[in-house]
Image (tube, rainbow, N blue to C red):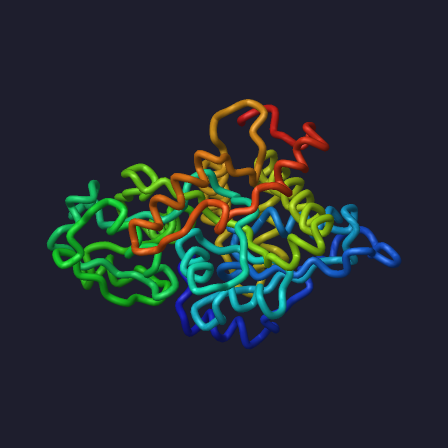
Length: 345
């Protein structure tokens, strides 16, 4: 269900921003856990978008990798930037390539170490009665965009060589409902959340997934600091292994992941179970690359190069080596090839 900003803020007030992942796992914390707590800043509220981390917490995967537990720090429209949280108070975070790239270009000592989605979830959504199906259909339209997504939107327009003066962008914070009333023509949302919410409310929605029209970004990227990579590489790898295990389980059993989201980690949000299951399955479609033996969270050199090329079109001057450190995730699969997903269901 779509969560109005007022109700989101009420829910945030009812529970602290930083929460030990609700369930705390089914097993007791390991005595003397060598890695401490796995603190992670999420990119948004606790919906199914982060189900892999909920599963990793609930099933004790963090503990199995040497952590004493986890803290999943919720985001939202009033939360501080993810990058500042990772630099100041969490070990890792979930962000998007253009946003991380902009921070790195300004000198932030951050690196992308993996990505949940092989395709970025961002899409332009529109009413089917007035559909936006191609980038050229954007001309003459008014598009709503949350402030947190505007860097991605501007980068998309630049990467595709679109004339931004012919597209009106207006701020709309996290809720596309105005589109259904004709107040805007389209909305930059996510194919695994707002689109499904509106469809469950009975609206006929058309989508244009940015990844399908020439914007090659990976999505839901994990970031950490250069200091962690230099001085705590084993901890970085332990964190990634726990996340891999969690996301393997989400792919195998999206209903379990949905129940965990609705009943525990996102309980205060009063999520609709049917819509949340559809969101989870849509997210799984973004994870899968259709190949046997897929290495979850891994990014290829080709993907990294294409991502940097895309964001550089927006005015940045980065190299893949400056933005990505893919050594830890590759070492993980070299050390344990069985972590790869052998089937695509």
